[in-house]
Image: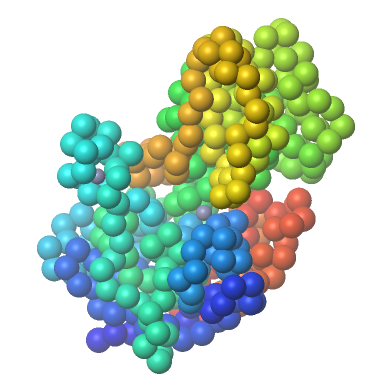
Length: 366
Ligand SMILES: [Zn+2]
Ligand SMILES: [Zn+2]
């Protein structure tokens, strides 16, 4: 029987989100229905609401979530009802050319549920990143559910489903930060701070946080930054060079994704160093004018990091273990716990500098 539950929907471009009844079908073959426990509010949700991602309104927002599998459809073997899972937005196919080469974190054919969740009048919903977890329940592809230790706190580990994984993976998977490396991270929101935490866990000894907001820099220090640079006051490139013996950092991570910050990352890196772009640019942005001789002469690597080049089945359980062992402070990313009706207010707070993540807690009937 399809179920009617509450969900947060963006009906049209720019309009405030609404908490409405949505219909969640029973899981079909390869699908799962998940009872959502917690879901972080990510910039991407706001981006959907503003029409910055596609025009497929109405959207069912929310995509950084943890919950419990309620039911699975035919042929599902990877998870079972009762499993505590983190939802991922890349259920790898196992068959595309990336998967065939043994690099499933690049999978080019990730999939979502085949059936659609709807409004009560039958209008089909587009779930954000194929998840849609600002809802009491959601329908996903079973491969989007990654089973983890059920003793972990849902509000904290749900964040691994998007921003924290993206940042951590940008440092560890894409940037390949190693023991003794110097790392600079430009932009200290949730993604940047996760990159800082990742760099620390990987053994980097110099970790430079760059932002224009001192409150964010303070938080970055808590998560592992050894130095901070306020780029509204100081030249980020000069400061990073100064803090690395005049050379630049081994790995520079742009967690903002603007031409200016990318240029800073490019010039703040040591010879043969690595630039990682994990901040998401908008379609009209262009790579700044980089002299090709510098691109060649500086060597190294210019890389982009999509979802932290993560493999959920490999990375989520490992990160939950590190969290449970007190080695990765995921709780530090949870600034506040809110209800399903507070998503619009959480969007407002994103413009200030004091919220890393608002997390929607969903406990049965709202
Ligand atoms: Zn694939
Ligand atoms: Zn996100």
